Image (cartoon, rainbow, N blue to C red; front, side):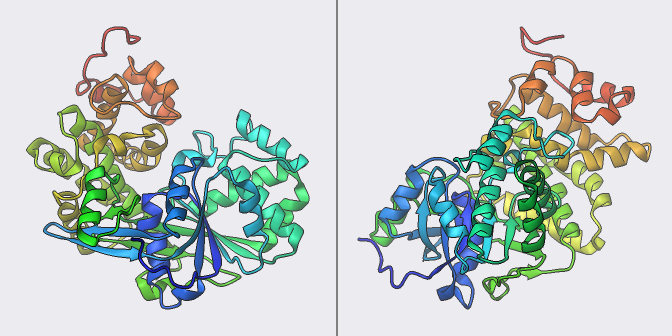
Length: 447
C-alpha cells in the first residue's frame, strides 16, 4: 500500500534530470527544509517515460535508503509533487511561465551542456543548430540548453518575472557555464530574448556531493520487506551529504540552509576540493581499479596498489585546493571512510562513463600545475594511463558520448594527450612517462 500522500506542496521548483542523485540530494534538501510545505517540485526526466510514470503511480512518493556501514535508514520522500518525461515540452514551458515558480534546478551530467572541448558553447552541433531554428519557429527542442531557452522564452512571454537557474552538475563554475550556453543559444535564436535573460535570470554556482549508486532489484525487495510497501523506484545513498551554493534567488528559494545547505560568497574552493579529491579519485579507481578486476569503489579500496595510487594522487592534488591543510586532511580521511563503506555498491563502470568530459576538469589542473613546477606526478600519470587503457578496451566498458575521437587515437599516447590537452602535446617527458605505464593496444588498434 502506498503511504499517505497528504497535501501536495505547490510547484515552485522545476527540475531537469529526474534520477537517483536528484532524489537523494536536491529533493531531499527541499523536503527537509523548514518550509517544505511551500515548495513542491515538478521534475522532468532527461527523455525516458518509465521513471516519471512509476513516480506518478506512487503520487510522487519514494523511499530514500540511507545506507551506512552497518544499517539502513529508510524514509519516504514527499518533495516531488509531479513527475514528467523529458519529452513533455508543453508542461515544461507551462511551469516556467508560472509566476510562482522561482527556481529551476539541473542534474544532467557534464556532457549535456553542449560545449566544445575548450568549454565554449558549441553552436555548430547539429542538434544545437536544430534547436536554434526550432526556438525561432516555436517548435519542440531537444538539447538541455534548448529546453532552458525555450522555457525562459515562455516565461518572458507570460511576463512571469525573474527566477534562478541552479546547475547541480560536477562542472567548475557551473552557474557561469550554464549562463554562457543559455545566453549564446538565445542570442543566436532571438537577441531580444538574450537581453531579457540577462536582466531577469540569475545563474547560481553550486557544489553538490552525495554518492548515489544505481538501485538494484535487491534494494527494491529490501524496501518492500522492511516497509510493507512495494516501492518501484527507491533510491539508495550514503549518510554523507553536502550542498554549497553562491548566487542570487530573485524570486525566493526554499530554506535549504535549515536542512544543512551552505550559502557562501565563493563556491570555488569547495568545488575544487570535490573535483580534485573526490571526483578525480573516483576516475582513478574506475579506470585503474576495473582494469585490475574490481567492480566497485569499496572493492578497489581493499586493493593495496589502488590505495597507493590514490594517496599519490591526493598528495599531488591538495596543492591545488585553496583550503587549510587540516581541513584537507580531514576531508581525505572522510573520503576513505565513505569509499570503504562496503554496503554502498558504487560501480566502477557507472563512474567510468563519459571520461572525455570528466577528465579535463578533474585531472588537467593538477597535471598542468605539476608540469609547470617541473615535477612528473605519478598519480596524475596513473589516471591518464588508466584512462587510455580503458579506451583500448581494458577494464570497464567504454560508454562515452564524446569518446570516439579519443578511442580512434588510443593507439598513440601522444595523440591522446594532444587532443586532451593541446598545450601538453610537445611534452615528450610526460608522454614517455605515460607510455611506461599503459598496456599495449589490443589487436587492431592504431599504432
